Image: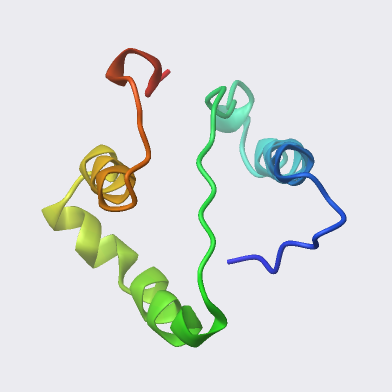
Length: 92
C-alpha cells in the first residue's frame, strides 16, 4: 500500500517501484538474476476510511490466494469497478 503523491504520475511511480524492486530482488539470489516484471500494471485507489480493511486483506493474502488465483481476483476487481479490459492483453 502506498500513499501516492499527487505530483507524481502513476506510470512514473510504478516504474520506480518495478526498477527498484527488480534490482533489490536480483541481489538476493542468483536464481532471480533473470527476474523481470510483466509489461503492464494495474493501480487502484481507496478511500482512507477503507485502509484498515485493506491492511487486513493484505495480511491474509496468502490464504486468500489459495481460493482464488491472482488472475481471477484481478478480473473480479476490473468487473466490479467497470474497468473495460481485453483478455488478449492481460497477461505476459
